[in-house]
Image 1 (cartoon, rainbow, N blue to C red):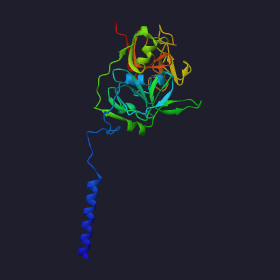
Image 2 (image 1 turned 180 degrees about the vertical axis):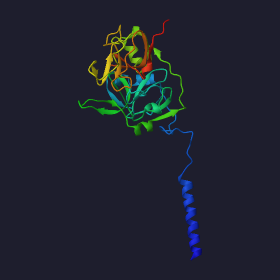
Image 3 (image 1 turned 120 degrees about the vertical axis):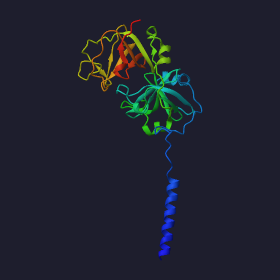
Image 4 (image 1 turned 90 degrees about the horizontal axis):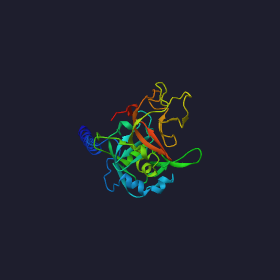
Length: 285
């Protein structure tokens, strides 16, 4: 009886050890815990080419599922670090930029500015809101209008891969003020990180805040559209969310350089600050 017990225990230990060996792999410390590490670069197109391929869909404020097995690769230029950009990141590959919509907070934690990513587009949706190109999934609002909006975190994790450890240099493009009404310039550059140099915020008086929810400024979709001297608000505005960390900070006075993600709403440029430090005193030439 004792011999049989000993054999049974030995067999149990052998089987348990075997299960442990086959069921638990050593963690790969070289792989990111975010995204889909199995993705490889197979059919990367430039963002400019992507915009051209789906030009009618974007300009018509329509939506289309991407059925081709294509990818884009770019560097993160804007994220939600101070709450002014919500559930979105912008990426740029040097040819153009695009907005990716993701239903997740804290994107800046693993998608910091300067991080390069590969995005598999097959089965995702491409479209536009106010002719601003976006990638995501269909969403229907209370009015029955359907457009591209935020994809779930689980879906996003299947479709992107981090490339390297970030740290890429990101430099804004200077906005050409002479082309503020140029339709092609807007189509080519909307979504990019740009800088508007040597301008003044119209209502800045040392106390007026960016986007206070106190009735002192009209809020549209919880955002304040601030005028810039020398520009019509039908052409260009500084757009700040009332939920931004700096919404109640006073707007700087005097000539400033304004850096941000330059999105569009139809024919109006909307500058989205990433952080309050995106506004700096203008540098005299």
